[in-house]
Image (cartoon, rainbow, N blue to C red; front, side, top):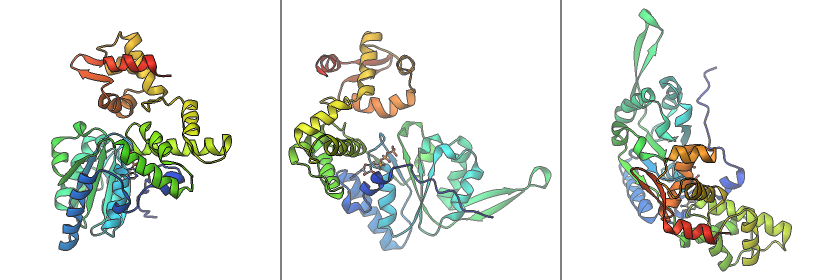
Length: 328
Ligand code: ATP
């Protein structure tokens, strides 16, 4: 049977889905990004045309998938979810492209992982809404030229630098998502506590926010853990004391660094004498993947000036030494 593409929804637990905003008005922070998108959405709707292609980049958990959920809702259209890692050849892309309806959205997460052949296949699809399909093989092969319905591509990447120029240029709107200030995370924690029926005071919400490394997904995860802790070890309500004890138990320190973040700093300081050290060497020593370190650990350490990147490698800053001394 000619089944449609397997819609690769992000693997998220249902509680995460419950917390994910559905409309732009429910999103917190990223005001300048939202303002620009709102203008593009209003204008596209006014013209009755699909929205231009949009590329989001930034560290994980800052809202790329959330934007890919709320934008189609604002445009009153549907979205297909795909992942760059799963699209190994142009034929993997064809079901998605032939499935697009006029003005609908195709979201490709981890778009930097598309192989070159798939990326090139996207060029005419994105620019002219047209693809070539090769039917048959060898001498009897023929090419079918297929018109697609105009659609909007939303790409997301943690590595904007890995995208080729021609692919990047085909996105009319390019937005970088940065870390959230503590006040915005506090607002997210408060809103989500209400959604989950959790009692939390302002001071505790602020503490959760402070220890969430600028990332909404981490704030949500911390909140869910502290909720469990409060229900199991206390009266159910989240107080500052409960929040501290819960975060101590999972070894989240006062800057919000977890075991892996501190292991990175300790490796750099103790094994490599503060650096400079190459990413691969640090990853080997820690026995984990360099991608994880580069995507999930380093962006926050860089932003907090705990490490610097030099041409010769990563170096720990005096702030890192200070933090390791005081971190529990
Ligand atoms: P990844 O690259 O790992 O897929 P992502 O950048 O796509 O991450 P999301 O999955 O969109 O991140 O965000 C994680 C969670 O954080 C969401 O489920 C949502 O609950 C929350 N979140 C993200 N951005 C916002 C926001 N601006 N306002 C409120 N909640 C947000």
